[in-house]
Image 1 (cartoon, helix red, strand yellow):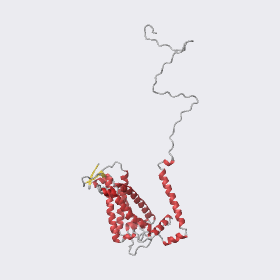
Image 2: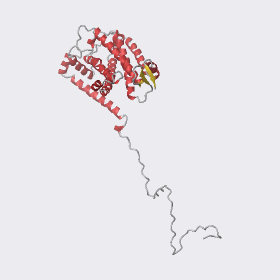
Image 3: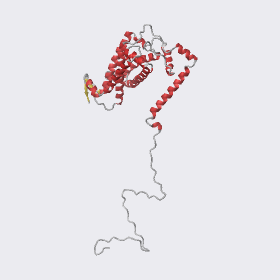
Length: 350
């Protein structure tokens, strides 16, 4: 319908007249959004999902804490067991027979020569830096610099950290060879090489005394107890050569084209042994330093650093100076310091 020829008039909507059907509802175009459902007076709000708490055993701190607690419990039980064993009459007789050490040959000289003190410092200095660089290699993802040797046309470049680690290894090997030569030339080898089968029962006796917290008497200026002697022998003549052989196998010094030799000694074997050998040295250092400080620090430091049997502070101050040198080298072992040194033996770049 139009009014005066104008536009169509919008039909009015209202209640249908009696007897007239209702007009059909106009379709509603979808808008892409769904209307929220209507809630009645008694309708409950939708439940919100809250994240479940992380189980205690899966939290980051749980394993280290559980390991420490487990070690403390085990150590306590071993101490109680050792103390109970020492109350038995048969064990007491056995401890009197094997007090923890045996007599050295008459030709063994007491004390520590000056070269032992210097070798001890160099060994500690190099070992700390070797452990530092070795752990850095295991976690290094993008090296800051690389080193390529000057010799060889097919020389493979390595990271500056690996170069530093291998350079320290070479110095450590030289120091070890000098130590072995002086050790046997001076007769001082009898201090760390067992000369009697009694070393084994005496070592067991010393372990029992340490475990019971009633430690064996220290006579380090004259003689080590048997467990100390065995550990020094194991470290110098077994652990050190294993570390050296596995390190050389993984380094560029190993002939890459020696197929038969590589088949006999695969690099995977060297990798599997080298890291546990490093962990052994870490454990040895921790136990060694603990016993040095716990069994008469001034006397022991005088033995190793001042070369004298006394309880004065001379060895302690020398130890502090050596410790300052090691700490300084630890923080100085960075690319800005290592790169100029490495460039003397090869090419350093990125």
